[in-house]
Image (cartoon, rainbow, N blue to C red; front, top):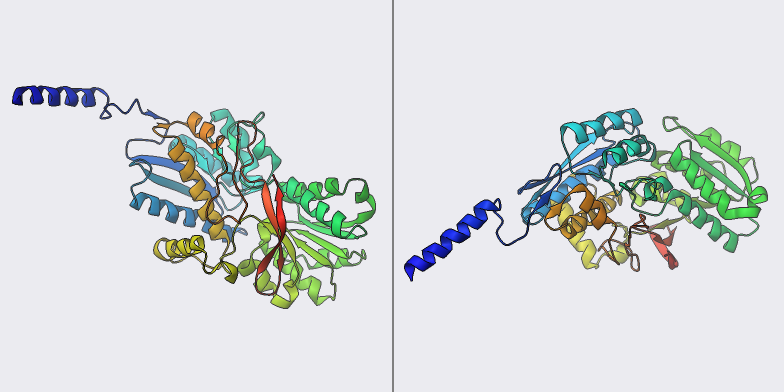
Length: 404
């Protein structure tokens, strides 16, 4: 009996040795950056420069992966995030992305930030067949699987967002005279195009003035004054956070009181609305798909309590009033979901296959009714939003879920 048991044990040991240490579990398939103990992923983010406030995204995501690693990782494999500074400079993004792919040998590029920066590396990553996954930009080009099968965005496109504002205005202010401020890059231009196309045949008489600004412009005061002279009674801001706050202050200070719409990327109570001034921001309308950590409405929500506990333990230097850290947390959870779906086939091909196979995923810090869905022909994970209006203390949800 003892000899038989020993023979069986020897046979099992032999099987394990021959299979590289994985008996009866099927063959493990690994792509670049993956071992039995590690999954190496890359990212570019603006830790310096005009958009450095968004650097918290990479830091928060590294903190979330630290939590996952402390809990055992992904099937025993620890996630290693290599996040490099590109200063929101496309030329630097190209340099850093090539470093991540060719020298660091990462499995994928995760949630890289910015429209112009990601556009600069999209063809390179697709030619290399490296996943450009959950891009932190709303350009339609990041949800086009036929042309760019290795690129996938996250939230609704900038173009779709612009159309949503147009639809709301047409329904609630059909005689509006609209002025729009936009940043002069792909992000701003796509939002403006969506607004114009959404207005359709009415654009010619409703959209009475537009003005652009450059990322490094010190202020947008002159643009606001010019837009005011158009006689517009509705203002749509397709500006990033700093310029958006400047626009809010200047509009109020010159006595202009338009119905004010603020784009999704700049909608932050702590970073934009409060710094601009509560009375100056009152009534601003926007859209969102995630819970606002400053909103007392969610104070007893278990999901918010879990988020706060994570922030305090793993990212104590982060600002708990900054909704950007909610975004970072949600994106990190989404990547973990995809990696878990990959099982033991952690290849670039299977990463994209699993990213395109997400069904009704309701992550905890998304607003009620918002779900993530993808398919091989649908590379827009979130296509639903809720309308919000700033009431002086919080962004209050109104209306039903918009989108599909």
